[in-house]
Length: 96
Image 1 (spheres, one colour):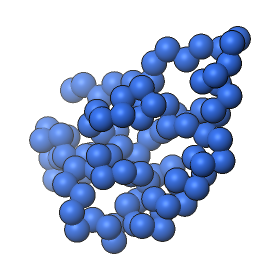
Image 2 (spheres, one colour; image 1 turned 135 degrees about the vertical axis):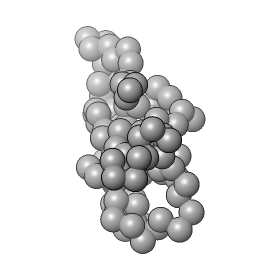
Image 3 (cartoon, one colour; image 1 turned 90 degrees about the horizontal axis):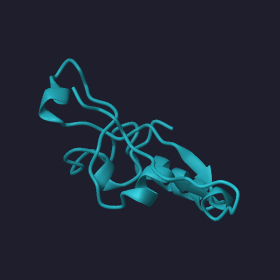
C-alpha cells in the first residue's frame, strides 16, 4: 500500500505529513478502504506495537530502527469471525 497509516507506523512522524506515503489524503484513503470491511491484521493483533518494514538504507535508518511500516497483510473482517478459518498471528520479521 506504501502508506504509513498511523503515526505509530512511522519513526518520528512530526513534520512528515507532506511526505509521500504519509500525507493526510493517503492515510484517509487507506482508512476508507479498511472501513469497507477489511482489517490490518498486524494492528489487529498488536494495536500498540511499533514495528517497521521499510528503512532508508542510504541514511543507515535500519541500524537505528528509524523506519516506516508500509507493508500490510489485509484480511476481510469475515476471516476474523469465521468458524472455518482461524487467523492466529500476523507478525513482521525484521530482525537483522
